[in-house]
Image 1 (cartoon, one colour):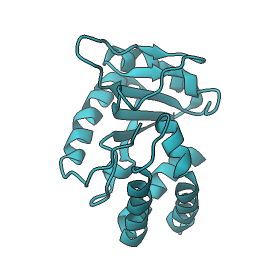
Image 2 (cartoon, rainbow, N blue to C red):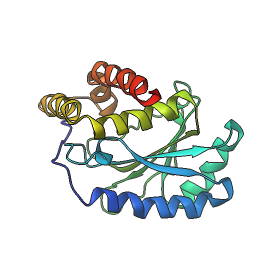
Image 3 (cartoon, helix red, strand yellow):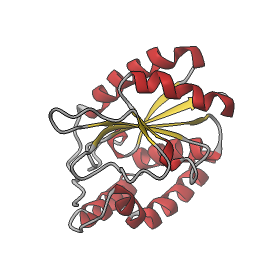
Image 4 (cartoon, rainbow, N blue to C red):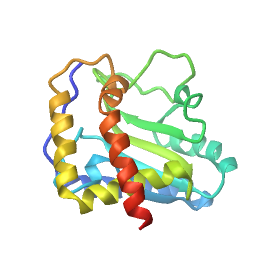
Length: 193
């Protein structure tokens, strides 16, 4: 599969706000902090047309309390990624073929991944606020917003990768991982300062 990278769309912040309201309504009893992250949150940055949303909660024991409310809203819960990232609960709003319904759960061992014929429109990353992983997402976003030369270099990496074939979006993410990890470390040092 090819990963589609498109020019920045000024409507992406509006799409985020629409989903932010739905998430806050569904999870209000957990007092979430909901932020727009990822490439669609950086003005001018080319990106996959997927809205990434970071939901911060106060404690680990609240993570599993998001599953029922978010799946009720139509998001698919990807439990399959928890063994590798136990600190995160991941959900996606999938663009299903006509006549098909998104599964509420993709469990450990299920072969299903997003991308290709079933792309994700929205990804939700739920984790505890003020942890390393929560901070790295926000730091990278703010760093790219404040450093257009790094954002341009990131766009070039993604556009270059979009010419290649990948088995799924996880392979694409692995291909850009070295750039992202380096930028994250710079971003965290900058953010602390």
